[in-house]
Image (cartoon, rainbow, N blue to C red; front, side):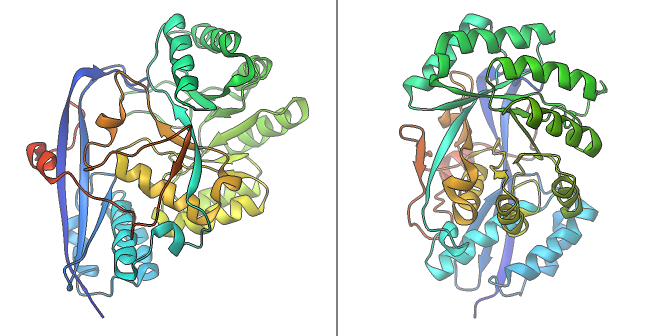
Amino acid sequence: MSTIVAIDITHHQLPLDPPFPASWDPQPRTKFPATIVRVRDSDGREGIGSGDVMYGFADYARYFIGEDPLDIAQHAARLANVEFHAGRPWPLDVALWDLAGRIEGRPVWQMLGGTSSRLRLYASSAVHRAVPDMVATAHRMLDAGFEAMKIRFGRPSIDDDLAVISAVRDAVGDRLTLMVDCNQGWRMPWDTSQPWSLETATTIAARLQAEQVFWMEEPLHRGDYAGLAALRGHLAETGTMLVAGGEMTREPYEFRELLERDCLDVFQPDCVCSQGISGLASLAREVVTRGKVFTPHTWGNGIGVLANLHLTAGTVGHEGSLWVEWPYDPPEWTIERRDYPLATHLGAAGGWIELGDAPGLGIVLDEALLARTASSTATFR
């Protein structure tokens, strides 16, 4: 039996020129940070993860060194304890799954019980463009083979946001399934504005239903269980639009509340931010068992995208996810920028991705680029 002998954490920053004007941040981002977590065993194998910055984790590494790398349940339980004391340590869970797959010679999606590694993707845009440019973006996604696209709200007025949806729908008809991220579930550190009320969300929902929007994401604060349940119940009576959320929900009890209170149709936790692959695998299965959709948030670098894809393929597959998020909004957000830690960037064909049979997550790092982008900090500027 091998043992864990080292956990190494490094930070990197890719310069962005032109900057990336993310819709959720008013100041364009001039750097794209990545935190790389490597866990090595006594036989020289290495598992790789990425996600949150892991500040302060060094104080807790001793609870993993010397342990069996395949005892993932124990590691996940300890990581849940560490999260209370030192932020979100879930990149290590991802790295441990990658290492376990390399030890066993199997891909993670297969270790989780999946029968197919083929998943359909939706293009997830991020930039607030003018109406003609958003229409052009929608056509670009169609030309690339995507059948669904997510548009983010947050322009100066809600009328500006709704004008974009109307224009895109008029331009593409029913050829493109549209999702809308209202981005009310969480706040950037600087943002003290109040999230929408149930009344506001209900009014906006009626406008989105008229445009045949497939889901309305984060229309209320993530902890407004009563409001989410009321909104979801109203939409179920008046049309087919779904309520999505959960990308920044963290604790298992919070997901239980969302499930028990029937708050969401679509669950979107990200395994590099919440509970890791270990914790979300059981949640994904329960979500689908209850007739709902599980499709992770994936907005990060290619390692996080891969981790969430393996999680989805291994637990609920295409049937339970419908689409999985594919962050993509060129020219500011390209696959090359997103996946810069990887030697080979992830590729989608016709709006689908095939994960293949490489052991673990199939990660090969671009070591030369990581050396050039090494940093003592992990910030966006």
